[in-house]
Length: 97
Length: 424
Ligand SMILES: Cc1cc2nc3c(=O)[nH]c(=O)nc-3n(C[C@H](O)[C@H](O)[C@H](O)COP(=O)(O)OP(=O)(O)OC[C@H]3O[C@@H](n4cnc5c(N)ncnc54)[C@H](O)[C@@H]3O)c2cc1C
Image (cartoon, rainbow over all chains, first blue to last red; front, top):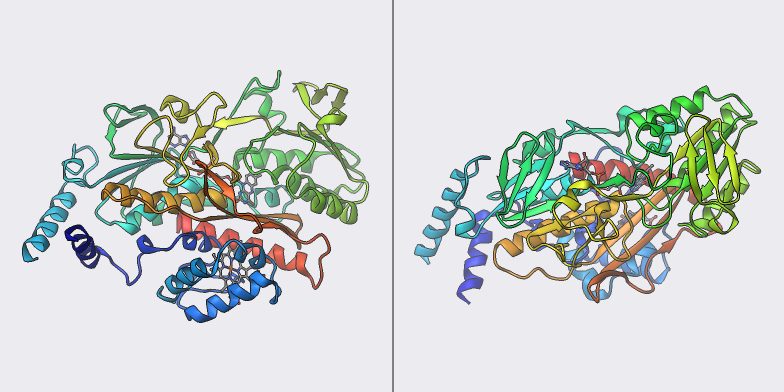
């Protein structure tokens, strides 16, 4: 309990931005290899940082089922279950656009 | 509560004061950290930046001898004259701006007892955690006749830079109707689809500039990454230009003669006009010196923080490591680095890092506007990173709606994104 309080405090004291990658859920840090965390000039891969979590979840579900066509996202989305997808979506939604 | 807050502030003040390079800091005694990262490639530069981003109090030193990094992904496009080598080059300004101390020299030794890294100038850097991402070294002598001198005649171009430019020059100087001979090593090696992307892009370039020329690809394997996609694409785009010789048909190169540009196999010998020998590889030499490489020449690691199973406190990333099902790619090295950095922050704080999920995607081009990809998602399983069943796979064999052109565009975007994330 004391430890928890301490780490919450440490986070509040030391973190710079709103959502630091430290609390990124499993898998999220791999998405940014293609979906730039900051605005990269000249990328045709859509940006997902700052998007509504529900929309990210919808895309991932539809990609996973194959209902929505994609070049690569169908193959990637199949690696994440609903719970993992929701955690990742919430994290991206909290990132600056 | 107030006292805890004061304590934390005090602790971070002391850390900031100890953030000098040579100063033997008190940080470790206070439970926080000095991290040394060796190698400023996709793994190391990403790890250094991410560590600093996650915990600004960490003292992070990146050891890298080259002021300019030349990236391998898309270097096959340089061979095909689709890009300039300068478009492959990146500096460490953004890494430095992030608060990482960059030591522009090589690491020459690691003392795992004292936990110090020795640099070429004799400096000793103490570490609480060491990250090694030294990439590959060539196993010179694995192919009799192929040594560093031979590589000036028969370039490998498997570390991008002067070798890439040399091979491109040789191709441009070749007579039309010439024979390009490539040789590809057995697994594991850097960038499994790379030799086949190269064969296709050289064929692409030849189809424009040297249309009577042919390419022979001698392989020490019977199967390769994205094989059907490559072979279908070659047949469709460059019929009759590329001949692939698998291991079972005598593809293994057993020796070379750089003086005559001859590659000898178990079944015969081939005289080339341009020879590109991609030799067998092992982890960058510092890995063996640090005692983290095993008899295979590569580094076994656990699958959560990528800590060496041979030496505590040393993490190995990227090409140098044995990552289970994950291939040796820039995408993978970058993804592993972000996971490793987060895990190190947890470990230094005395917490246990959570099991990660990772993605790898390798794009390959067969022509300027023809891209294919392979993707997988990984999780730790029985001490190794394993494919998540049902996920991943390769681009469809039948492309509809301009998919190959779309993937070529996505490939270029991926390169811009990952290099921005790694080098700024
Ligand atoms: C032709 C080709 C095409 C490729 N295409 C792709 C692609 O499309 N997609 C993809 O994902 N991957 C691709 N790759 C693979 C990719 O380049 C590597 O997997 C990636 O570079 C691995 O990163 P790394 O950090 O392990 O090593 P590297 O990027 O090689 O970085 C290692 C760094 O460590 C430094 N170093 C070594 N020893 C020391 C020492 N003792 N002290 C200090 N510094 C040291 C080196 O100078 C180097 O800068 C390709 C490779 C090739 C050859």
